[in-house]
Image (tube, rainbow, N blue to C red):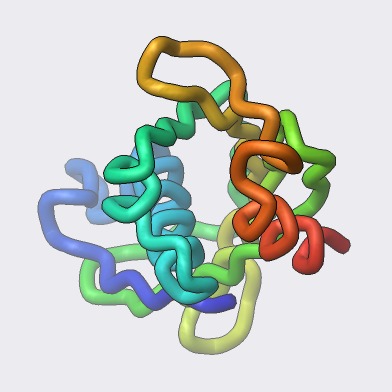
Length: 134
């Protein structure tokens, strides 16, 4: 799945380069879009009483971006076995050069903060994510 982000002026620093913290925000944007593209819109999950906190983030910067650059972010399911969801991200500029690669890990919890047994409690979501795992 792919998400396109246009670098905003406020995302750049005094040198005109995108501040490193924004790449993590873009992963969040791409993850929300990814879930929507596969039919599991984040608002739908929340209405079902499912929250998905971030457990970990990695970000490996390869090349800078600047104001108005278009950054294509591909999202893939690295691993999913029902408890934790591991996503991989690759960000490329308009020339196709990789500018950043990253990962995030997430849990699925109910509103009381307890882990959800996805296979039993949400079999359709479990299957959708399992089928996308590499």
